[in-house]
Length: 82
Image (cartoon, rainbow, N blue to C red; front, side, top):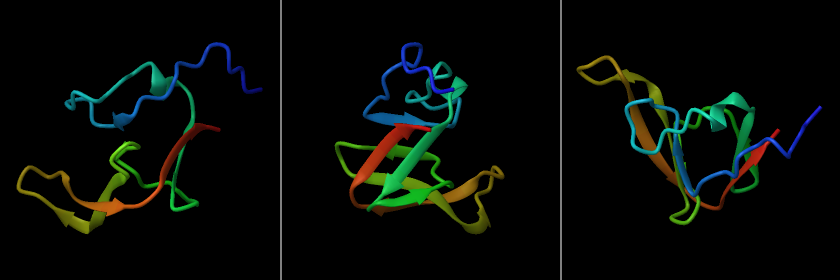
């Protein structure tokens, strides 16, 4: 089921927004999981392992361009393939 030989290594920083310089389409071909402080998070938009933060939507609030407002949560970040 999980063929780890074809999976690219997970970067230190990754974003799901295609406009971001930290976006990598090859990684999103696989199912990725993010843990923050040993809790599995399914709403992460961007993460940075070395700096220890994730960005998640702040409720239903939107900015003036229609994108969700983000809040940064800090802690121990782990990224893994499911």
